Length: 270
Image (cartoon, rainbow, N blue to C red):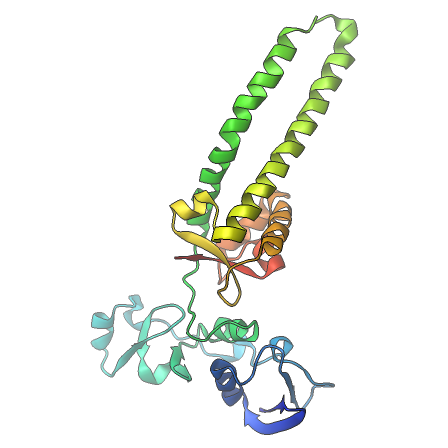
């Protein structure tokens, strides 16, 4: 499949798809560079271009399923490491993009990151579901314990001071519900500031720092404060509907939760 790309308002090509990706790896073709191939109605940015579908790429399992170079060497031939997954494969089975080599399994993700502006050498070690879950528990304790103490301090005196007569039942039920709403909104307000400041400044909340993971953009750079705030609000969507938005991170190839998909972020190990 032949492609063309725009340079100085002039079309360059035809070139193969593999060559187009190599140019993207080298930084010649950028995410915003216009590209075109036969069958497309108009030129479009490289980041939006549809390259070879993942299904067209054969799946090649790791040698002996171990990823160990010593074990892999037993199969004969030179062994090289995939920059994305870290597994070892025969050199002939890897796809080279500039100075980088990726396996067939990782090629779709690698190309997608290039389209989003990532550096070819910036391989990401994605943080899995369980380590992210543990980080969330740590952050929950940091925020939740002080609020639990505050809740006891606020609600207990109120409940003790009530005259529990049946005719006052509506009154007694209404006021605590109102207090709970104010309390919940206050919690989300503090949690929003907590996440925005820590992720915007350090790329990680204290819970993530403790486990050596951080939040980055698709190209591996840190989030701005505005981006961190947007990610927090998007995370609210992940928390509804039985936490399904979080659970999908366990099945996503880049370990992304719903809010990571919405904000184009990744959680990676340092």
